[in-house]
Image (cartoon, rainbow, N blue to C red; front, side, top):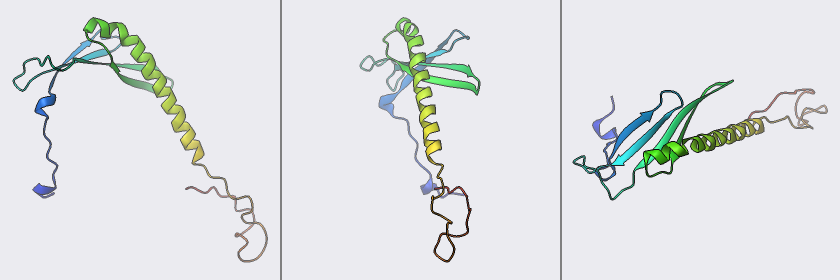
Length: 135
């Protein structure tokens, strides 16, 4: 068992508290409203209300969860901006998938052209090795 001093000390920031409210149509997604509050639970008007959206899209590879921030000051404005947020989050997810595919493809290393050619020591080993090298 870990010694007591090895455990991280986890604390909430009393100056960064929010009350969370979830709104959903039970079909397309959800909107979260984070209302800043003081330590006693009263609304903190000095900080802005934050909105975020979440939805899931069915793809050939399975369910794709999307989460995104919504720049809005009211729930009505957040509802109006929800579709735009979905589109931006989907474009970002597609770009990330393309980048991951590129990175995975660049990890495949083709054997050296001259490797394994010629007889004798120091010539690179047996002819026709043809093995893929991994980084």
